[in-house]
Image (spheres, rainbow, N blue to C red):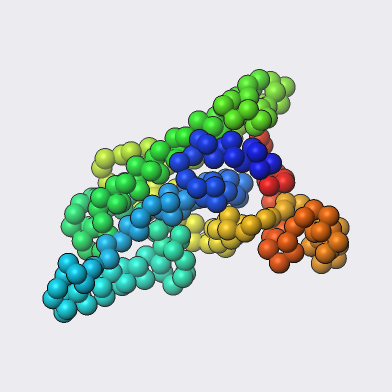
Length: 251
């Protein structure tokens, strides 16, 4: 995907360009829902309600609230030392809760920010689903212009469409969601390395998709210079299946 095409998609998604890249890499790696939730979480104010010493003048109460705050963060993080994964776990717990002020208080999160995050997740899922559906429609180019559509002779069904639809339905549901549904949609503990890879690839200034013709599986300094790539800031992705119609071939 060229930078121009990435920019066109970014027009449709209300997040910064690095987070658009996170969603695209997540979609290519089969975890588009997790990528959407992480991108939404990173695009807004921290959902945890940090106590402020100016407002909470009693020092003992301030220390207690601060301790509860960090304890809640550690609980959702689960020893993974990753804020995006921590937000992912927190959002899953929110969906499976009664979404009340008592739940927010127990977990040291802001209920208003969690509701804002939930609305942003639904909005992102809806917009991304519309773009992918337009790109996958036979014989059409969709709003994004250069996202190649499949031909009638080669029909294409994007599995991300059904996944995003389910995420959108969960986000817009008003009642409690069963934990098994949340686990099925978001929690991928056995694929944590995939999620870490998605985060790392989204943060990398440059990355390639393919197989380098060298024993070290990485372009030489001469090759990087020809491609105008910074050797110490380039990530090479191998073994990733190409995804139609949006590919990770060259952005």
